[in-house]
Length: 327
Image (cartoon, rainbow, N blue to C red):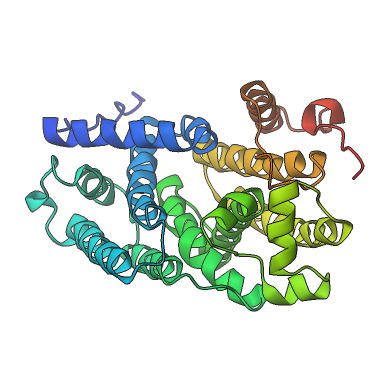
């Protein structure tokens, strides 16, 4: 019996091709970790992942550009976010009318939504998360922070899961949400000092109070770089929460198929590696930024690929995770 001929992708119009390349460039420039993981996806899925990432990145950059408390600046950004949301909606409602030159992320997303069942409702949740950021909210409890993490990152899992194809229904989507939340909490813990410089504190007030850490303590540590034992204890607790979400998220990995599963697996390991680096640095996220050097990222990615291709006993710990320095 003659095997079926491989499916050929439909030619991509020049304007859409340029938009997809633009999204690739945004992804590569903005997140080395995410971009490295995306390369493990098949070609069409990879371009769809870049389209999703770039669309999210544009909205996030609009909020990050707000540097002061001025009402006029925030009102202008709110209008820009409204325009961003409309451009996103056009990917579903009027894909032929999207101008690639003005909204490359929308044109690329329109291409992606015709190939994969990406839910528009996830972008509406993301929009609500951006508005939370714009309003400069601080979070009273860890549960409040979880809502924020869901809206600005957890829902990205809902966008990416259909690109990788999945089974398991709602259980798999809940795992995807948890993984996105874990990555966002990782970013928050990495960027405490940078956010403080912009007048933002994402650390939940109840957990700060439980460890005896005040806003004045944060400002003092930012000035001196002298991290207190109480602050380290706070960081350990929140890192443990992030790792719990990583564990919950990984439970959904077997429900993804083939190379997309490996791409998500690598992304999760690389992001969790930031927590390792933060711990190694004694939880000083004021004077240094926890990150993984390029060689370390490649080591961790290779370890995950090896596990996928050669199931069996885990690799030696020396390759799997760097030795932890006591703090």
